[in-house]
Length: 391
Ligand code: SF4
Image 1 (tube, protein in one colour):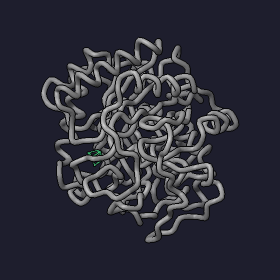
Image 2 (image 1 turned 60 degrees about the vertical axis):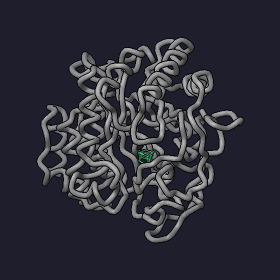
Image 3 (image 1 turned 135 degrees about the vertical axis):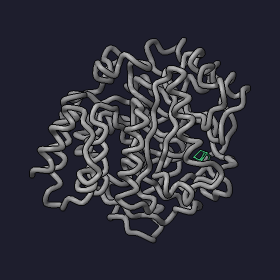
């Protein structure tokens, strides 16, 4: 297919595809899907080989958020039965992080619900970063604390943070339909503050919120312009008790096309499959490793992922290898900036779209406008509980 040959050539040269080419990837037929995956896979292997970076989420503070992000189980007014707790102590967060590192994660992502941190919160997270780094040599730490005020990114960098995550989530044109308590520009501003402070910027999207193909292309093109080191791609997990609780409109094929389009537009960037991997890709997860070079290990913020062991087995079975702490995530031309690793994935609420699993393998395909509580398991273990984390 001429389209795919063109996109591979451009991907290898880091050249931006046209909007029409990106839209055409999303419009490909199921008959062409494996060709799309193979083409985007060439670009992925050129820049990242067969390495898969593992990231581990620690939800420092869960629920009780005053913001109204429609996709988020921690939002104002959410009746989702998620864990709710205030700040973990540094030792508790460090213990949770250590489980992820022992499971193979090279990056720990510290996430807290809320509009943004107070200066006291930044102090708290700084202590937590120190505790994690003291106990886990070589681990990368990414903070995801919401909108940043002046000077906070610099303070996090000084405390040892390697990266900062804040997602754009959707296109500028539709942002107001998803959230009313802050703006798209607020989000862009925080990503830019992280960048300016020397943190590795991580910013991504959530697919499946009722957006059009044009919206998806818009947000991915905006991300390319913002130039984060990593782009987490979340697939909405519709939580009962949130406004988007019945938005079941993704298929595994659609998810693969979205990941392929993201790879073509951001060829040399860490593309991470974030929340919703198990729920929406289901048995097609291994194919997605040909497109993304990074995933989360174990559970998400408020929902459970498949067993960490199953993540590792999937990577090995598909012929990929877990990236070690001695390997640099990003291609050489990008690795000189930021932390030399990759970026974080998610953002408060977004990577949380959290997955299910265990039972997901036997689930029937999801249908729009129907609640699928069988596909979404609220997190009941790990941070904020007395039970061991999944890693
Ligand atoms: S995404 Fe973040 S800011 Fe938005 S409601 Fe959820 S926790 Fe709050």
